[in-house]
Image (tube, rainbow, N blue to C red; front, top):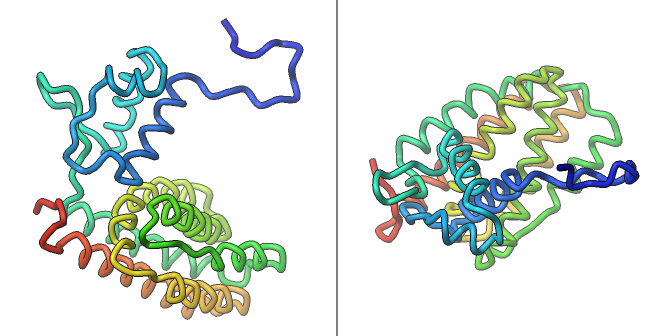
Length: 231
């Protein structure tokens, strides 16, 4: 039975119960409220979200496909660890795709898009506040996806959108030790300038440097003595 009256056509259709569970669980995993290695109980999640077990089970199966959780026999589900291999694989892919996206996007930026990207660059965060860091990372993702969209290759943009989701949890952990707002804003502004002026090779170089710097930041944070990582 539909959750929305057929007479109400101007309102957005609310997400399904499964989509609601997926969104809530993904957010908790990406913010590390559900920490790497933590056991996830279907019953506890269902009670917390005030949902039945069926949509929660379906949501966990979806997140397993994304690599965020894994089924554990007789224990239920566990939040996937962030491994050194994961970091290298995710950032290797970003280094393959994002510089090329920036190269193709150069010269395609209009004034409206420039203002949008500049506003995203201005986002900051409090490294002691996980939600603040997530808001910053949401803006950072929008920045990178926007450049991919400007490349003119919709499939490239979709692949990077999902890849950036995978790297978000790593970046949440990497942003904790210190505030990189100023550094990242400067990097973004330099990239926007290169894109606006049509300097394709410069844009690709700056993007490569940004992604490489993010990988080093994450590795430094996750290989600290108190980090929960596995090789």
